[in-house]
Structure formats: C-alpha cells, structure tokens
Length: 186
Image (tube, rainbow, N blue to C red; front, side, top):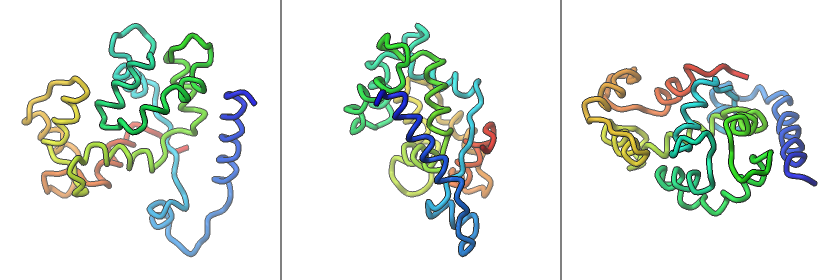
C-alpha cells in the first residue's frame, strides 16, 4: 500500500472514530482532558506559513531533512529525529526529497488539523522545568533555540498579553486560548 493511501486510510479511520457519539457521563471539558474526545482546530494559512518558514531556515521555499532535524533539535525533540525519513516518505508527495509549502499544508489536512494533544505537547516543549506554567524566561530560551532574539522584557510583554489570571506566567488554559485564537474548530 502506498504511503499516500495509507495516510488516507488512517485519516478515514480517525474520522470515523470522531464521528461516534461520546458518552454523556462526562462533561465536554472532562472528555477533552481525559482524551476521550480531542477537538480539532484548523490552522489558517498565514500562521502555517510562519511555521513553515521556521523549518525552512535557508529560505529556499522547501524544507530539507537536515532543516527538519535542526528544528526538532532546537525544540528539544532529539528523540524523534530518527522518524524524519519516514515523515518525508509520507509528506514529500512529488518525491523530490523536500517538503514544499503545498505538501506541508496537505500533511496538515490529512492529519486532521491541530489536536488538543498537539497543543499540550507544544506547551510541554515551552514548559522547560515542567511546573505547569511557562515563564518569560522559558519563552526567551525557546525563542533563542529557534534562532530568534527577544529581550526578557519583550517576553514578559508576551506573557502579559495572554496571562488572564495575572500570575505572570502562562498556564495550559491560557496557552490553549492563545494558540487557538486564530484557528477555527473543525
């Protein structure tokens, strides 16, 4: 079975799973938090272009395996680097050895969009000390790893922009709200 057909098969299976009615024993929040139901959010093209551009470090309009691995390393995800060739086998639809923006977006569509668990994973990437909150210092460190320069005061302003409870940190709820404000629910 080709990689593309396999992805379609997986996508159709997952679609059926989400079409089933969830149990009414739990509230929506309980189902989401427990993983019984995972809302999907569709990213907008402008936001996805920004993500793509972070991977495309040499700005040639395509992502190489080396660029993909470098971004994973910067995000502290070294343990997933061995999966990159397999990812490229599936996502590189034209077989040129690179992922262009069209292929990048197609992979997002086949994956069903951004799931709550993806947002939680991103949160844990920023939450370097694992305390359940993201500080301005942690944001500054992550941006530095991604090649961005940002002063601590600028990072503090970013935190204040989404910090609803005023504790000077970003918790999971605040992070989710920030990450999904430009997304639409599928």
